[in-house]
Length: 342
Image (cartoon, rainbow, N blue to C red; front, side):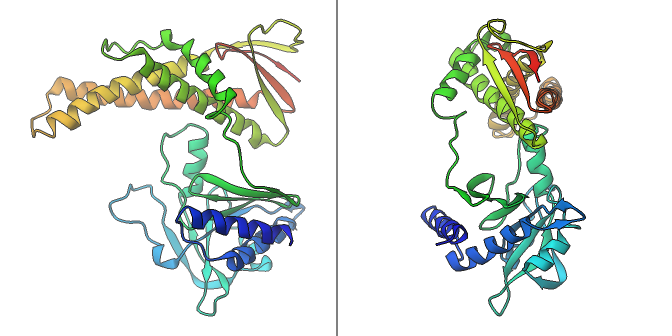
């Protein structure tokens, strides 16, 4: 059995076991085959990249109660057959960084491209760069993304299901930053940052601060690695207890803004959580008026939280950019960048 068929069987099993709608291994295999063959084509010497979801046209509109920036699918006047030729043409107008193609069988049971989906790709990128703290997710039963030549990734919502890279089938991804020894090490590093968080609330226990710090430090490092990966030139992130021992750092540097930014963000999250709880769960719940000073405090903290998010986005991109090309970024246990080795 070829790898496309194996991948189709695997996806059908994963979707079914999670009680998600699966069109069956046959249709999934046809979908994957078109995407995989397209990945090996070029346009003006550039490899084609695209992203498509298996989505029923009945779900083309977002519900009115969802946020204004939620995705919407816009139908083509005339759906086109989902084949390599048509997909290669549409990829020129459907940048995967902005547009996702919607695919579904027509009345004859043949896959066709029936619409274009907005918002999803943009917000996913912003989430990865920590420029936002929420995303509405990806519609459809599953999404297939062409990353490069003979390189496709299959995902559902914001989680990767499997990938096929040059005939190598990747059935799962280990979440090392959230489970296992690397996760434990991150929690240890987070405990070193507790003193930076000065939320001004005596009732906040230390373990709660430590848990929030661990989660957001893990997210920060995830996004740094994603930014390194984005450049597609290789790179590494080394966290060392003694950054001067047996290490030849070509370009020394002290960049200590990331731990400060994460601590400030955690602090604002705790403060806003407290005042938000007071406003929503007490005042509004009991139909009491919101005092002016409480409202001002709530708004100020909301703006500060957004400022902290923007600061972290800049930190993440700055650190990730230091990896170009084939660079190693050296950090100490306080997550302060100490240099770059090229």
